[in-house]
Image (tube, rainbow, N blue to C red; front, side, top):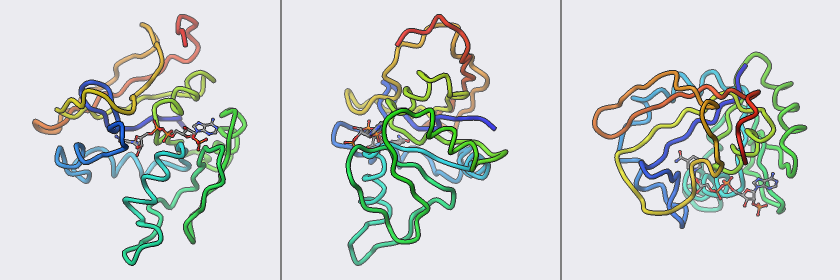
Length: 190
Ligand SMILES: NC(=O)c1ccc[n+]([C@@H]2O[C@H](COP(=O)([O-])OP(=O)(O)OC[C@H]3O[C@@H](n4cnc5c(N)ncnc54)[C@H](OP(=O)(O)O)[C@@H]3O)[C@@H](O)[C@H]2O)c1
C-alpha cells in the first residue's frame, strides 16, 4: 500500500527534453526487461500531470488519428490540470486540480491494498512529497545526459530523507535506484 514515484531519468536529472521528447529513453532498454511489468501489476491507481497525459494522448493513443488506439492503463487514473481536457473513450479517468491530499485519499480508497503510482512529472511527485504522502522513489537512470529539460524532482531533499534500498543495473544502458522516503523527517526543505 505504498505511494510510489516510478520514472526514468537522464543521468543529469531530466525525465523529458524541454519539448517533451522521450526519444532518448526508448533505445536504452526494453521495458519488458525491467521491473516495470512486476511494478505495474501492483498498481491500483495512478496520477499524472497534464503534460504527461497529453504526451500519452499524442504518442501512445494517437488520439484523433487513423492509428488511434486504447488508453494503456486498466487502473483508474487521476489527471491534474487547471484546464478542460478531453478523455479518450473507455478510459477510467478523473480530472482534478489543486491540493493533492483529497485526491490521494480518493486514490487510496480505490487502490485498496495496491500501490499508488505517481507517473510524473517531477513537480507533481514533489507535491505529494510536500504533503508527506510519498513513500518511495524508484528511478531508472539512463546512460545519457540531456543538458536540460523537464526535471526529475524539483525539490531540495536533504539527507537522511531518502534511504537507498536497492540498486539494479540493466546492462550498459540503465540502472534502477529505489529509495524509501522517510516522510516524517522534518529536515527536508522545499
Ligand atoms: N521519463 C519518464 O519515465 C517520464 C515519466 C513521466 C512523464 N514523463 C514526461 O515528462 C514530462 C513532464 O512534464 P511536466 O514537467 O510539465 O509535468 P506534468 O506533471 O506532466 O505536467 C505539469 C502540468 O500539470 C498541471 N498540474 C500539475 N499539478 C497540478 C495541480 N496540483 N493542479 C492542477 N494542475 C496541475 C499543470 O498544467 P495545467 O494546469 O496547465 O494543465 C502543470 O503545468 C512530460 O513530457 C512527460 O511525457 C517522462
